[in-house]
Image (cartoon, rainbow, N blue to C red):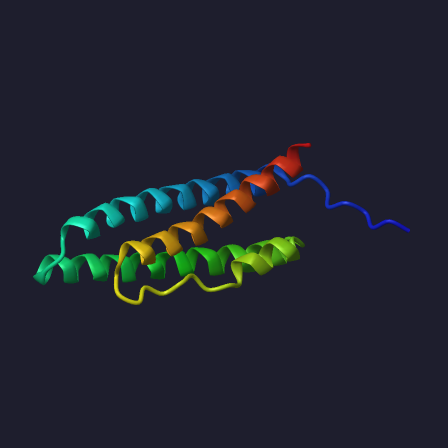
Length: 122
C-alpha cells in the first residue's frame, strides 16, 4: 500500500515558509556582502570586525536553521527537517572560502524551502 502524500500546507504554514525562505535569501545576500568586505579588509581592526560579523552571521544562520528544523519536524516534514539539523559550517579563518561554505549551506536550505512550497502548490 502506498503511503499517503502530505496534504498541501495550510495558508499560514505556506506564508511562514515563504517568510523563512525570504530570510534565508537575505542571509545569502549578507554573506556575499561580507565576502566582498573580507576581500579588501586584510589587516587590523577591520579584519577583526569582519571576522566577528561572520561569526555573528553564522550564529544567526544556526538559530534560523534550528528553528526551522524543529518546526518542520512538528509539521510532519521529517525529511526536510533533517536537513536543518545539520549545523552550519564554522569559519576557520574568516576567508572567502568560509563565506562560500556558509552561503552554500544557506542556499541549499533556501532551495529546499522553495521545493517544499512548490510541492504544496502542485
